[in-house]
Image (cartoon, rainbow over all chains, first blue to last red; front, side, top):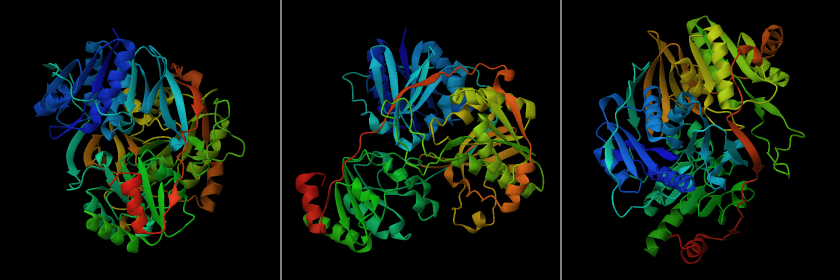
Length: 321
Length: 264
């Protein structure tokens, strides 16, 4: 059997959208290997998330709704995923390359004595000879890699795979029996969620980002984002300075985004930043420096002061409504 | 307290990386090398913990060839106490590196292992987690802190990790917020960018580093299978994004976004 196990993710009982992208990647692999896709979901109070997952076309959903796996600790979850992979006869184990996926999957790889490719962008090779395309050197290079072990693990970059669509009928949800998890040495204390009324950065249709040029004043960025119903992003310099929360960061070391429209204000366009947003459909750049590298990749560039242009843009959008 | 840090030699991330025309590798002529930036953060954090506790030992470990000594000396010049170079004849994958590091950890018995969350050459971000699993230890990946890198706490070199009651308290930077975890020692921690700003090596530090020992271990003597599980078949350049046009004013921009790009 060469089945595919997809590790889904939920937060407070709500399925993460990135899981549907991972599910789609899993389906692509299953089509090539001739196996089926089993989606695994772990946590506590996850009934709705499991149903949502089941509606999007896996062959089966395995759910462990249990206090023992309430918090995603790599130490214990890796044991659960290992067992699921064995029970499923999985050739591939797939997760989205979220912080959770990146934290847990390597430990599963160690337990299965399997090779793993991180942040996979797409598949190559032919038929069952699957190769994995992944970025190296901060996305300056795309490598085509092969995994030589019988079981292969991968995290996929959600922006590179479309979300799995709703299927005609829902897959069955089965209870997954957890293995002995032992006593973890890692203890969850608390999760401080950054609450925002704006859409999530990686899922937004429009992203408005600010850089050094804001000098720490994000008011024009926020106003423009609110006018567009957009998420807010930032360059690394701005985040390092503590001007905005860490999870605003777009770039190789932050979030990878691919919205329909990305508006970069006061961002010079360092390779590091560009690596995280160059997949955007349309890029607009506003910068005082006409030679800023961001203009080399922007579809539309406007040279000028963001403190003048952002409010003008906001007013024009309002007027155009 | 004994802390072990892994340091990898990588291509200078500020240099442009070009793929050879045949896709067999990257162009190495004129290449500069640096310690992996995340590993420097790991060494810095270890130094701060040692300073706060008023003692301890920091051991830096590399898995590589003779050239890695330069980056190890850099870590020693920052203030680490000694080095161990595990010599391999060809580069390992993340799994091979983790298996070798696990052997060194078994020998050295540190209380804490701090490594970068990823090396900026292959960007796999797996070694710390693999190592924790091979050791059967707890892990905390993506360690950061609440205070910014321009805060007073950072300027006074306060460590972001806290050692308390046989545990390391870690603030993890995860999707959507910060996760606080306590991990029983010994533990593996991997560093995020916003844990600290690494210090520069001082001139006296550089002089002292020359006299610090770097022990060499032959990977073959450690008795682990480091056959790569992940192999690169070929490399290519990513599709370049073409630049567009400059627009003179906001009105033109709105018009283009509406009628040409059709995104608003």
